[in-house]
Length: 87
Image (cartoon, rainbow, N blue to C red; front, top):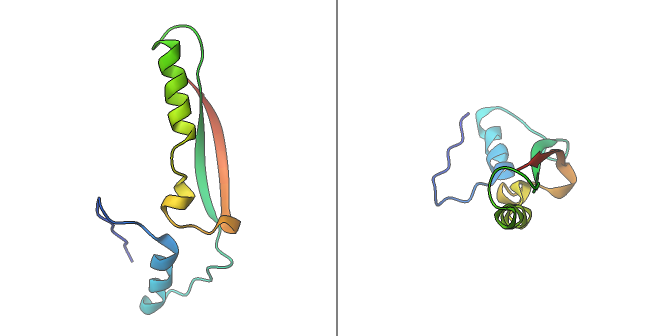
């Protein structure tokens, strides 16, 4: 089964997995784990863009919407693996 969402659609992954049962694929949503990556932007002094821009970009990155919230994933089933990205 393939799930497609358009630009204006709000993706709901658990609801899409529930629909898989109609096609013979039974998925227990309470035993499903979702693995996500997370990047933490760290501003550094030196070459590249101006330091104030790096700080602003890091702030905007921290305030962005969570991927788990975007896909409507249950909080108790999400595992995030992160890395620090220096800009």
